[in-house]
Length: 191
Image 1 (cartoon, rainbow, N blue to C red):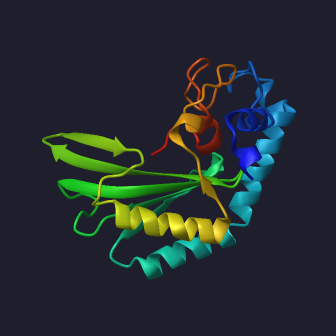
Image 2 (image 1 turned 90 degrees about the vertical axis):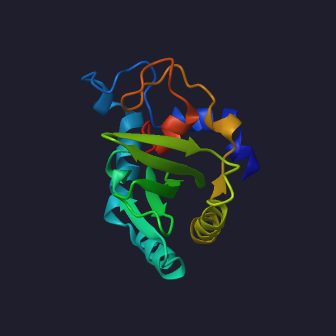
């Protein structure tokens, strides 16, 4: 597995699913073999989400104090996504804290991070933390990550690998020269 998770190996992998040098709005984009491969995987993940659904039920059962929210971005991005609100910080409260887990369908990897949002007047300010996470998020992140590893056999990628540039690809709203491996593996908007 380690050979598969090097930046070089992951760069080769993402080029199998994203056509180099084409914008998603280019009429040729959807007829490329790369797009067809990615689209096939996403459609399969949507039509058979049994493992993901079982994972969500397990998270809710084992972490009942957290507020688990699944976002169906798998239709558009190559990853399942879950936000787990920390107890005492519900959605809509003046202060909201969450751990986010995303599981890639291209390769068995995941990312985990935390968001801390505060409503200040009409503005919401959000701080995103990458591992190592602040102590208040750790018990929830560790439990979520353990469940993901147990369920999907995934590995968490390190930040230096995730931030590897992929300059010849355009992903979602992220243009050429700005795309990273994280964008390719999890989507360009990690909500």
